[in-house]
Length: 274
Image 1 (cartoon, rainbow, N blue to C red):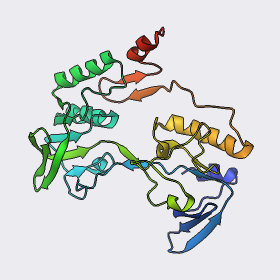
Image 2: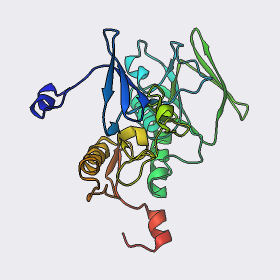
Image 3: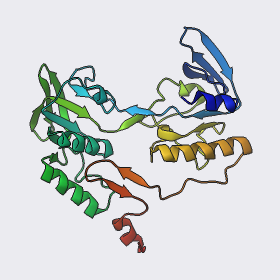
Image 4: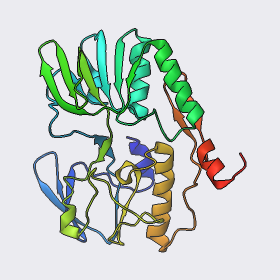
């Protein structure tokens, strides 16, 4: 953390886990076991997100990973199952195949990264196929079993796949479950994310939310701007700046994809010129 930056700007940093007591009060559970009470007129929730864990998948099993825990893998798999063919799943499929690991990529939809141009999506599918990645479209898991030497995935289609390990990469969830949002009348969606308006106010006007905890676009560059807009609205009562519609995005698989603005399908539908 850039401690000096915050000190120069007179920002006090408090370590601990916070939860709402009422609309203007936080209880902070400190590392030393004490509980500190904080009050404020306004709040900004910027607690980020974490990999989504469905309750029927045992993430304590040593061969079942999410996109965080896989960074601490202590064995060298020969074959990996990746469940979820979004940005994270595709990036890891490219990484593992680049290390000559056999990859089965389970896609719950009918094509890869549907927000891309059809040509880009098809090109990615071709390059994956050409490199040896097995893509299984329109598949969902029925049951996941962890065993001593790997993982067995039972698909709803009746197929059964076994590999040395599983990377579950099917979405993320907001870090809101410990905030006691019910105490201030706020609700999240099924993935723990908060709804906000154009000034990043939640249903409680004095509570703002920015970054991954509000979902799309879930990019660091956008979160910086969201924070600036929320800060302006918080201090001045309204924000004159707005997040740009066309956010440049890079996807780090091989070959990589970069995009900005409408895709070809949307442009054709709207009769736009690219």
